Image (cartoon, rainbow, N blue to C red; front, side):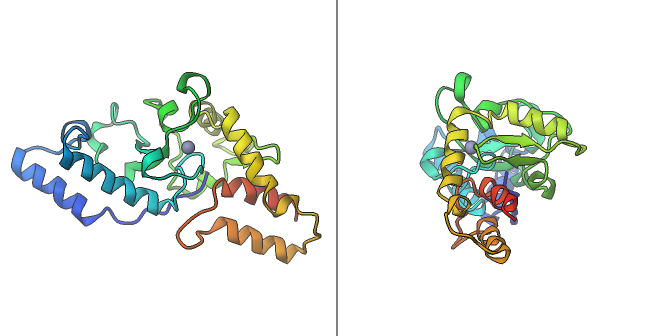
Length: 221
Ligand SMILES: [Zn+2]
């Protein structure tokens, strides 16, 4: 997973929540007041989702697949069903892909995770998120053994479907198309430069599955 650097909550979003509170006399909530069933609600949701997608460099908060407005949804890391007090908290909102295949069979990310949560699960905003998972050249994701978070990392992989057929295949292809599989003999400095490239946004975009490529490049050092 790629750590997400969250910016401030958008001013228009905070103003809208405050206006709701002033008008209806209670805190605004996602399902009731941020509905996609009316045009204004739909516009607000799309506007926020756009902001989240851009913030994340156009990749899914969990699997790093490329996302757009049409292929994503707003994901609550702490499920809104169990944590209604933070269902419109910007820090609990991310953009997730819509998965692949059938949710029950080969689904992944937000729609697969649904209302699952554990108190020690690690949000994508924490630096630790880049240390508890490791990707191998065959496209699989593993928890890093020996770390205090190894158990929860494994559980997150299962609950979010991160080793789904589609994700393993996509990651393997991304790794195969990177410098990891080049015939050329790169110096350690070259490899470090590639790592730097994949670990950072390029013109506001991350390369899909960038951290899987980074892990495999590190193995080349
Ligand atoms: Zn995803």
